Image 1 (cartoon, rainbow, N blue to C red):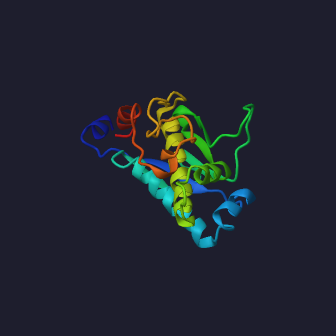
Image 2: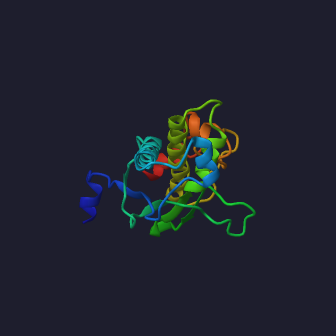
Image 3: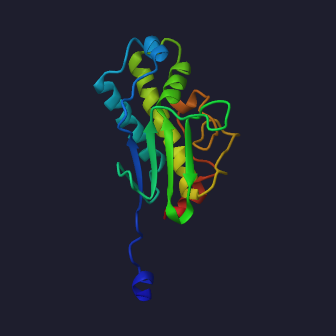
Length: 193
């Protein structure tokens, strides 16, 4: 058995579950008003597709595969909202890294939607803001997956607002810019090889 493991066996691809909870997701009333009404089923599907593409883009080149498996080793669910849990304000995302047992996390649809509309460029169209919501959700999820994969809360890089490691969704780049890995890139490459 040891010979089989050490003799060029193909590396095992890590599995991660990224999915939307079954609860109905809708824009908070004040945000729906700002973007011109509630989301349509097609727009919600677009947000889901954009967020999934963003998670996959963030981990492109790493040995990890994303599915909708709710029981995957690492998993992040998109939920309606996250309570503050001892913090004065709710968070956009949170995770529990459980080492050899994987990890679990969540992204707040409400908070990310609010921030995507808040940071939308002046005169942005409804479509631009909906795309921003999808990107924002995917990028928060990528950040949470990094916490789980690296089994640490020490993933943050507050020096680069255009990084996935930036510790806050309060920035335009989260929704409308390009993001990249900084301090976590080498660690992720080592862990996901």
